[in-house]
Length: 566
Ligand code: ATP
Ligand code: MG
Ligand code: MG
Ligand code: MG
Image (cartoon, rainbow, N blue to C red):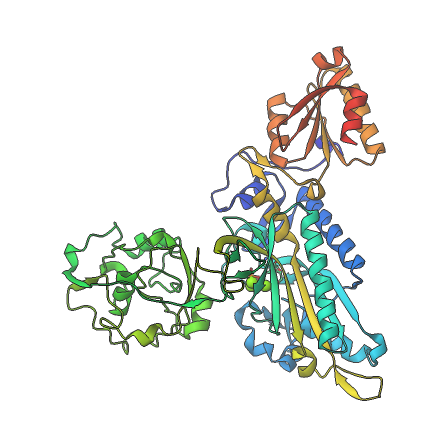
């Protein structure tokens, strides 16, 4: 590919609306452009990476015996009404009507559609096991689309669905997919963990998530440093919370030392959420006693409330508004004063039904507790449902190891569904005795764009992307240092032609640009290998080979350089 004839619109400045590094770099490297919130154009370089990953996924799905097909994005409401998810799925499901007033949705996932196909096509036990997959565009009207392809509203997913005669056969299908997932993410060179997970709106009996480890990840993971136990903290076996704060000194508000958070905007900035009239999104928190007390006092308008950070505000984690609504049925949920100093992630099922009927008695007018005392200052039953996972705790599985905590990006998810959808949609088959039986299902997703973004999250430096070879849009670039120098251009062209002949996907940087510009762009777009052709080296018959990842530079005779790359 000739750089001058191609389309790589690189950008120097870091885009201000991109919070995570992969989003910044994908914009800067000209891989994607935003069309609307959570909806992106895949530019040629982005598309090449995506196709690379799709092909790895396709190869491993085929190898595992799954069969490719393609289902539509537009799905009729009737199927979703049959499964019950038309009501249950909520606002993430984008619904619309056609000209005949027929109701439809954009598919966020395809259990209903595939089960409908299967109930028509599969009649006999002889037709199973069978597993279908597709690589297809999904739509989920995410409440907060963000981080570029990481959490889009329109995004590409590989989804597979297995069909078996019974539960143990379904377990085998699940294991085969699980192993295929391990191969897929290993082939991409990613640092990941498979963790026990919650089944969410998809449902089913058990599931594992594949998490790429990254600080920017939205999920918390606990894993044992000794056995193989690893789980999403939402799912992790946790011990009951034990409020440890003692004392409880009642102080006038003005005497409580506060960080400078007097307005909702201060709090929002601190908590890294969008400032709104009310804080709607606090569900995970630790050591936030005074803050919670303040909320409970009914001062929703945080403008007047002074906050005190007694115990590590840094540990506060945010849940989405959706989470809160799900858990509490009202937009305000909280988790209270545990008085914990350890690094913890807390999961609250605590319900506060409207602020007024919570009589805490912790504060008097203009007075406020520090180190509130559970059981004395508020009813301890309120905390009965709180579970927590603490770094350093004994592993709940082996009891010997200690728990470590990580942040992760969910790139894949495998579910054992059991008969949830087959029962709802009446997908049955005839067994060897001619008896009607319900089909057992599993489903298996991989976020295609999200995985490419996660790979960048794990592989970059201050100069740009460092693509793992299997995901790189091109394997190698050939940079002609001076496009006006006929000798340099001729030599570079020859190298480019030879590499192409050898099947090395090569980007030939033939642009009439200063070397500095070319090097900056080449670093930014992250192509793993680079051959630099300049007049000085050529005088000795040599070119430079640079390895993007290590920065290593080798001065080699042309033939040797080509042999190296190959
Ligand atoms: P999340 O917890 O991040 O919202 P999910 O659990 O809702 O994801 P699944 O229903 O398990 O997602 O879908 C399978 C895979 O699709 C996920 O593991 C993820 O890689 C990808 N995916 C899900 N939602 C998005 C999205 N909004 N943008 C990009 N990829 C996504
Ligand atoms: Mg989701
Ligand atoms: Mg999830
Ligand atoms: Mg999931």
